[in-house]
Image (cartoon, rainbow, N blue to C red; front, top):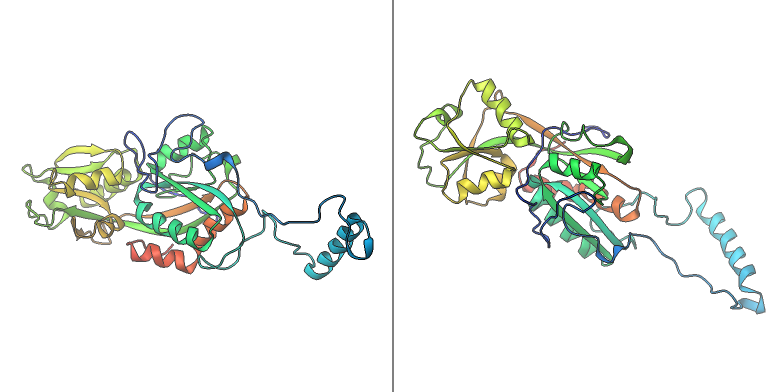
Amino acid sequence: MSADRREDPTERQRGGSHAPRGRPAAAGRGAAVGMSRRGGHRARVTRDGLQPGRRGVGGRPAAALTALVAVLLLAGCGATGSPRADASPRGGIESGSGVTGTVTVLAAASLTESFDAIAAKLERAHPGLTVEVSYGSSATLVQQVNQGAPADVVALAGEAAAKPLDPARVRSSDTFASNSLEIAVPPSNPGHVTSLTDLSGLDLKVVLCEVTVPCGKAAAATLAKATVEPHVVSREIDVKATLAKVSLGEADAAIVYHSDVVAAKGAVSGIPIPAELNTTLDYPIIRLDDEAATRVFVHAVLSPQGRATLTSLGFGPP
């Protein structure tokens, strides 16, 4: 799908966000939803130059030599110039760019495993770069960004979730993945669930996401298409909390994203939902500033390597 698309339903966050890459997320106005920016510095590209008072070739003042170097650089680089903080990064995850600093990312809970993997690869490829990711409900993340929480990037579950985002904060938006729903059951499937219709059984314990978050809205749309009224015993703040009820044996079934079933690695079993009844969400990644580190992270997600990681964890193409 094309760039500048926005997102759909949202995800969740209970009491805090899931932040497996380091520290638990912090809520509240003006506070980052997750990990704080280390050292308070922002990413930048630096270059050493001659120090004032030093003399260069042939005893010329450093200022004159500096001017000569500048002319040569302009002649050699043409309109593109030398590396700048707002220059678009080239290459994929594996190519270093000399960018250093910290990029703070807020991401929907369903992206936990994929963004953890992409961030780890990016940090290995760029030793001076730190990626700090906090996970939560898409609706909560948008609210926190609007309230001034420090963030460089926000990635959401569904374009609808991005609609309340303050347009003044947005520098770019790209759709980078898609996701669809699936029924998750314990590996032994004690409720003998085989389809959406089975979720209406009164002896079945069904868990869904809250109706205000993307996974809950998507589930409601799918159940409406199937004309099924599930026997819901609990609604959770985000998709990871919903899935946990099943993996811990506290529920017989839940409607979650396909990517979450894949990421569970056998802790749950997935029951496909027919395409004509399913609901698909397109995921946008939104850049909130023009820092070099921010651009490098967004590019990594959109790169072939980033998309391969997303595909391996159950996401569909944009």
